[in-house]
Amino acid sequence: MKRKTYQCLIIENKPIAKNIFQIILVSDLVKFINSPGQFVNIKIGHQNSSFVLRRPISISKYNKQNNSFALIYKVLGNGTKELTKYKEKEYLDLLGPLGNGFNINSINKHETALLIGAGVGIPPLLELAVQLKNKGTKVITVLGFNSKEEIFYENEFKKIGSTYISTITDSNYFKGNIIELLDNLIKSNNLTFDKYYACGPLIVLKKIKEIFSNKIGYLSIENRMACGIGACYACVVKTNNQNGYSRVCKDGPVYLSSEVEL
Image 1 (tube, rainbow, N blue to C red):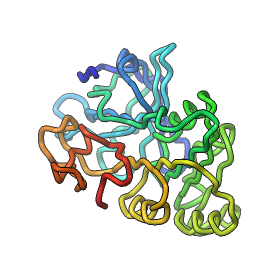
Image 2 (image 1 turned 180 degrees about the horizontal axis):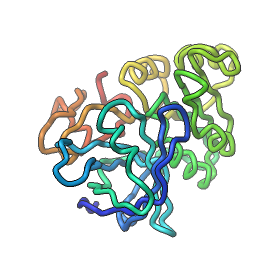
Image 3 (image 1 turned 135 degrees about the horizontal axis):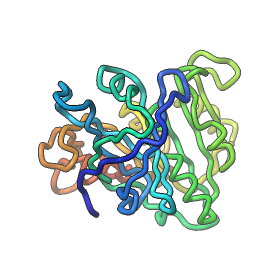
């Protein structure tokens, strides 16, 4: 896989939910994306910027016909706040595509995939859902948000398959966290599937792994990163293989659930 920096043209950069922005870019980088769930490392700020480290953000969707791709980010600190200031027709310096994403051939046509995403772990699941549907795999999606105002991509997922949403505060959806929603769906026999694919905070992934211990699953690990290419070992996760630890940015971020210890 080709990894280098690209000057990516910004097509749009706008809010799509509370504190959630979508940025759409055009670049030859798209030609080298080989699976949903890969990410890029963004250089934030212009000349003389105080932001030293790049920010890793997952690719939420891409189109190889017109070399466009989208990133979703949540405004949490000074770095992402600075990112909101970039305008249409400006350029953004990106390193990528990085990591190993979801293998859509890990599940067969006519089987059912359960996709589980929480918060900013949701974006990489959209492209996965699209590609699974296109190959003939049935898709069920379970999404968790803090509030109704933070919900994004709801309609996009509903067009693909059955979609269930939880929020902590709003009774128009399942009121509770995503684990409570999963428990509710299991008890009501609404979760018949063959394999699962999940992305979100480690505490959520750990619980998902426990709940579906009898199922084959794939987890996209969210760890703090620095270099993004496996050189600094800042993002390692413990595994049960002979190496003991794995670099999330280079070997992951997607792992077989039975392979990692959370």
